[in-house]
Length: 167
Image (cartoon, rainbow, N blue to C red):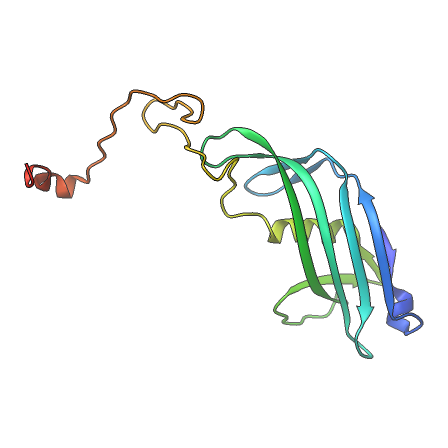
């Protein structure tokens, strides 16, 4: 979905507000795929600060099916992401501490904006629950469902002589 921001660039308007529901089924990333279960809600404001600077503030709300990094089970994850960034012409190169969004010929692609916001805000480690126990490294049993009887004695071989030190 592309929106026209030419009126802001020309100075005819100083702010554009947008509230949309955008349907996106799948977002394929290098390391994972996110399958969205509901339309993505986006609420944003694009505004002009001075003669040449355009900025955007907004929120993105979505629900997706994700995979827990500890137990490998799929679960439904809800997210609410706040974002802000600068909007510049596609040919311009500029260093900016926040997110940069590009417009081309006075139009900006909201779908690319959503993908960027989701990508920047993905958690480093996705967990189905804060107290997820994960899986047993020996037998593969999901420890959230059932406790296994495996004995795990992972002793660094370099320190194995110290094992009998306190006996």
